[in-house]
Figure 1 (cartoon, rainbow, N blue to C red):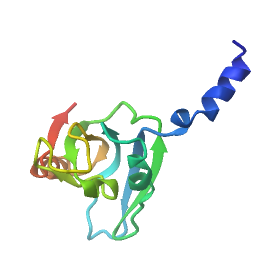
Figure 2: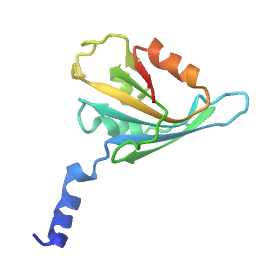
Figure 3: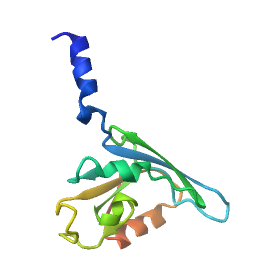
Length: 141
């Protein structure tokens, strides 16, 4: 098959354009407000493709500023991961997870998961506690 035609088909395909992850850079606006993780990325699994649309475009501009960009997949080289069951609120706030391991939401699939990959973590123990107290499974690399 002609390479140009194949490239055109791939570029025109909505699935090829949609990102699978969201890369997040976090900065503090004040020295009094510590940053727990400065660089992370998250991916949804078992959720509709459009679930990432809202959460990855929803940037905050409070005391902690986040910049988000869609990526094909989260990169290698992370220092830890947190995997948890998302709540309905996770569509706007991906850190919103449930302690319920099964079910818990009538609108999200039972097998839905959010996985956070941590690259720049200033307070590793706090990030781990945040993960585990909201029902997540923390793994150091």
